[in-house]
Image (cartoon, rainbow, N blue to C red; front, side, top):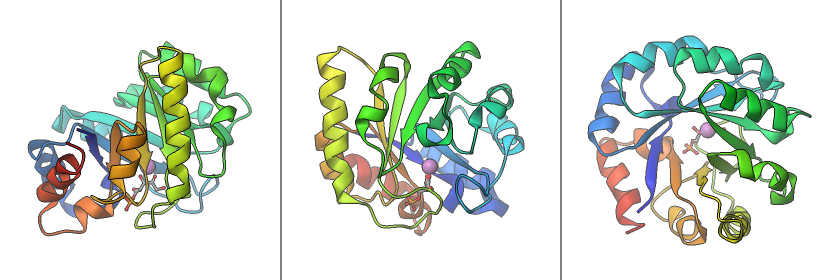
Length: 217
Ligand SMILES: O=C(CO)[C@@H](O)[C@H](O)COP(=O)(O)O
Ligand SMILES: [Co+2]
């Protein structure tokens, strides 16, 4: 059964604590926090102050997805704010190895992220050092996009490397995840599903978390 990480990008910001408590009680394992800098991706979202504010109100694993150019500049700040996992895009820095080292040196779980247009080969040298790999299943920057099925073969390729090298990282998917698209991704080896609009653009977000789990039993 897949672990579920609701993305607060689609939550009700005015009632954020209510929404977080709802998904926490509703069976989610992680809370996905999308950081958008207006440069690596066009949109602006929120910063470390949000992570700091959320930290005391939940024990969910805070999964910080940095869509930020030169993420090295902010890794310490997000770690100090209370992130449990920090994800950095390999496309956002020429120094992905150093960025991952910085995350680990802060005692935080390190995640490397690849866009749909980036091959798995781009991150094979750093797989030994990560706790999680995020395979983007849409181009990053916005919620509510359609899942790109061609990303599934990258999940399978990554899972093969994971098995052949006896590695233990989680494989996360993000973008366009629903109770149909999660199935091939799970079968290919995904272990964590981010879901924003599918969970929160619904009268009963908890039923959506359960639907993702039921689809991957
Ligand atoms: O990183 C991103 C978007 O760039 C996400 O985490 C979105 O929040 C996913 O939204 P949905 O596709 O599930 O609506
Ligand atoms: Co995300």
